[in-house]
Length: 179
Image (cartoon, rainbow, N blue to C red; front, side, top):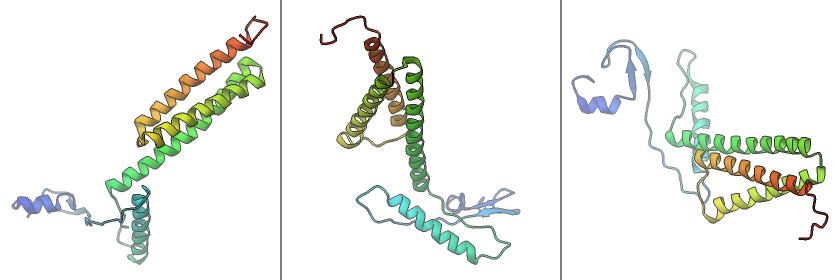
C-alpha cells in the first residue's frame, strides 16, 4: 500500500516500519503522531512542563500495558531542544565552577600570595557577573552552545589578563604604589 499510494506513504512513512519495503514483512515499530498545544507562559518553561506531563502520561499508559508489548514514550524536537538547553546550561555552570577552582589553585601555587589570589578570583567573578548580566538581561541573547563557548573563552582571557596584572603588581620594584 505504501508503494502504490504516495500520499499514504508520506503519511505513514515515519509511523510504520517493517523489514521489507512497503508494509510487507515483520513490523519493526509503529508510532502515532499527536499534535499537542501548550499554553503560552511568561517563562520559557512551557516545553519542560509539557515534557513532564507527557512523560507522566506515558508512564501511566506503560503501567497498564501487557508484558509482551513494548513501552511507549513521548518524543518531540521541542522536548529534545529543551533537554539540550538544560544540559548546555548545566554543563557550562559546572565547568565554570571547576575552572574557577582550578584557576584558584594554579594562581595560588604560582603566586604564593593568598591576598592577590583572592583579588584575582573576586575580579574574575565580578567580570563574569557583569558579562552575564549584559548578555542575558540587557541584550537578552538566548544562551546556547555558541554562547557557552564564548563565555568560556571570555573567562579564560579575563583570568589570563588579571593574573598577569596581579603578577606584575606583586613583582614590581617600585616602592611607591600611588602612581
